[in-house]
Amino acid sequence: MATKPGLYANIHAKEARIKAGSGEKMRKPGAKGAPTAQAFKESAKTATMKKGGGVSLAIGRGEKLPVSQGAGLTAKGRAKYNAATGSHLKAPQPEGGARKKSFCARMSGMPGPMKDEKGEPTRKAASLKRWKCGS
Image 1 (cartoon, rainbow, N blue to C red):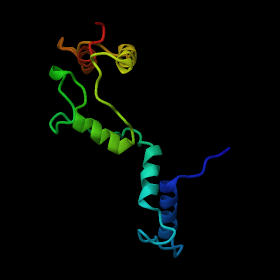
Image 2: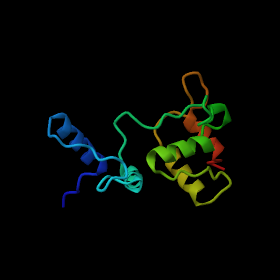
Image 3: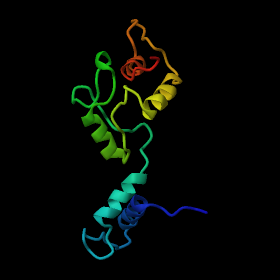
Image 4: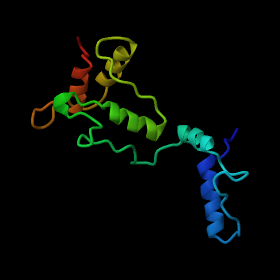
């Protein structure tokens, strides 16, 4: 069974028809038949990221920690990522719990070195240490 196109696909299709000279007009927010704010929120939950895209997180803006401090996201970074993607990232659980076991199992199996070419720990190594994986 084929899935229906989503809200944004419909909006882009209508914009293309208008540009091609269909004579249609976009409805104003709040007008009958126009998408509601709730419709946009629901659509954002299933939206896909563009290739090569993603949420831009920076150490300087306080959204993630440097390797020297454990290399994870801060509360601000998790909030930004969750708002942009509709995810529900939670804070680290280094003291134990089901999420610690799951994180350690997944992250330990990730490809990539534990040290960079200068012999410094990578973000992967720092996050495993911060979550106390292996202890």
